[in-house]
Image (cartoon, rainbow, N blue to C red; front, side, top):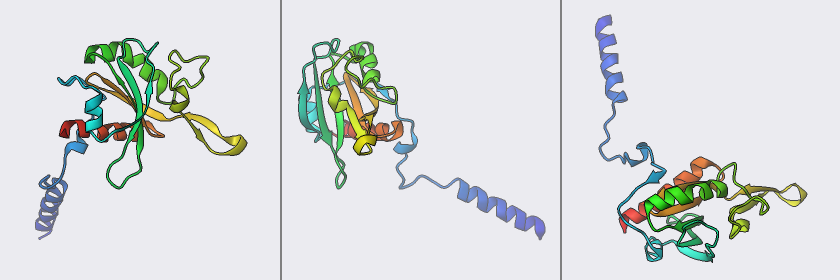
Length: 178
């Protein structure tokens, strides 16, 4: 009888532990690739088609090989808008080769937020966020991370790398649906 109880417990544990995926989305369990080479070469109209809204266009002088750069926002339905800086390059290869170091400079914990040290100064004030208030306010990067999606370098708002990547992921899904 004791063996039957143990066997029943093991079968139950196995059944519960191996719960099926029917009706569940497993996309979120798959690791998101922060550099994705997709066949499409995106342009400004493709950005607008996602529902992303432009708030500024930047002068790309000094942003090596970039065709254009924008600041704008997008929000999931019933959510607060998230700010993105999107830089368009002629190809994925050029985005990776020329855009990576500038994206690293403009995002993450080690972002360069002082004009005396930044290589591309255009939009630098928009890449900053003041946290706290009064005399104790601290300047932090607005963009916690970036991704390269095809020929786009996308800096995504978020206080942490994880939040930023999640915001990037949500925007990229819009490209896939359009």
